[in-house]
Length: 324
Image: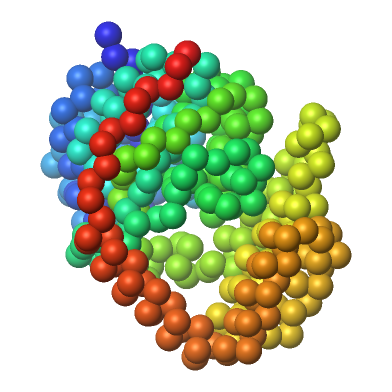
């Protein structure tokens, strides 16, 4: 029998997208699904949409909470599933995602976390591009190189119970924090197939406050390396911090703030002097030269190229399941 999967959707005033999210879950044709919607007290048409599908929900509620992570934890702590996931109220699962994930977890008991390729869609659900995602080590995931696309992340319940639920004090990087805590103790597996679509729109949290996203990630990194770690993991601290400081520097460049960007390059170079830091530092310095307008033009061109290449890319065959 396929394992039960519990999916939670945290929701707050996203009625514009919520129904598409819910349908992407309930229409998965997965026989052992437990689906919950935890709404933060929406004042738009979200409750009307939730009630429309309540017979297909294991649980739903609406009321004040401490934020997204708190809402997800409320659902996960009620969950009876062996596999846990959450899908935000503006993202969607790809058809067949749950079955593929369940089959791989069932065949590989040592796995703690699965993630995959991910498409980025716009407000009308048209594909903009595909996220650059691949199989990565814990060291690479720590540096967000690549980062795990949140809606593709599925975690074994036993792993969550072992390392702890989402940190409710985090508002942007709760998934990153959980992934590195799970990755420290359990195997992670990448599926080279699209499991989900992440929506890019002006009201998305990371679009509104990208600097806060990275700054919170740096706080998470400091907390992660403050614990007792194996020597080979502890040795990654400066490399990880340098990578995130340079990511923050790039955001300053996009805002036309060259002075703080250059200061962050100096800080990163002081922490870690390797080829990767040098390459990323040069990129930041070139962005400083390009300026805000030049960077914006280059980003528009890059996105157009990615969107075109995504349309032309052939479908990939599903991956083989990992060995136990």
